[in-house]
Length: 304
Image (tube, rainbow, N blue to C red):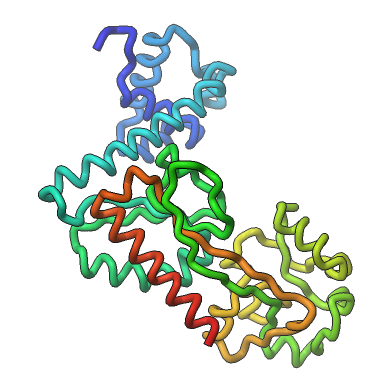
């Protein structure tokens, strides 16, 4: 490597400093000594000929060049992670065996409430399989290998993907029995205006589409706002108010009561997807099939 070609380690250190905000925090995240982190930053600045940070009494301040370089360093990290996942299969087992790392992207609700049993059975059967679970509602790009397999509530439109439609997950409004005993049962969407509604903080496309589809929800001003679906479900279970719940999950708790069933019902069509180049990779193939079968079983159980 020439002096003009920075080491990947230096980019990795730069990325840690940008993410963590200081040399000391980056050192802790990387498991390195703080002077080593400082040397990496100095070496990177020397190699590329650009100052990345201003040294001030308050600490490091990123320059405009550092801010411009940040997303490119993030892409390098994603590519390096994807490479390591691919290499792990060949390093850890013989050809054709189910081994190595598979990264799965799923929403917090699916990751916490549905996937654990599926993944427990899968990893018990394939002990050399390593699962990385990315818990996020954002749509990770399978084409750039930010994830190997994704569970999505909207049909992927990207080309070069293997996509399996699993079925429909029904969602309704629920409240804990204790809340309804204290505050009464709403008889219409307009009636939600006098109740404590658990809603979203962010004005997302989902929230806007819901208001357009059900104008009566305009009267329902959330008394509690949180963008985590898992946190919303915890608030509903605690009797804090009325909110959205997947029917299959709500039926696990006899104290949750569905309300306004005839006025509001949602359906989330569910898909499992992966890049077509991975369909012949044993670890990805068996994981894809296990998730698809497990999700289908979950949806079927919710219909009973």
